[in-house]
Image (cartoon, rainbow, N blue to C red; front, side, top):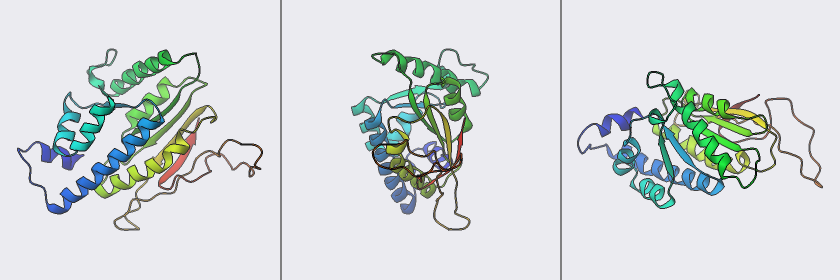
Length: 231
């Protein structure tokens, strides 16, 4: 994010070829994630940035992403502008926006039923906001990315998330909140951002026999995610 922000503050930035190539690859990773998420349910992008940031970013670095978002009418919410957020307290911005979006989602339901929410972000704010809006019968999963990733790490995170989406959004999962986190292993494996995922076991599906339940905090692999906490 710092690299993108610093480059965008300059007029017509000239990036090294290697960085430009990684950005093109990252754009495809972002497209893959947005496509998967849009197909799985109602997708909303919530940012603490000032209005216009998403448009600037996509116009400069990811034009195909911008076109996709426009074509699919993907909503962008600038959290600092949300009614109920405290302009002096950044921690309230996303919580107020998540509350508003959760109420909108419940209102769209044809009949009252629990929500299934997947929250993805690189700061604690998204996770705290998802926890705040969750009702006892809701199924909520939060994915925390690295706060200061390299471009390569961000690519790996998005690739892992795309692979995990079918399991994250599968119907019939137990209600509750599950927190997952990405961990970098670049120190031990240069050039990679890998982690082992742990999640709750899949719900039973008869008539196939199921293995014995695993201890709390362990379970199926998401390939790149690590650490599950359920509350």
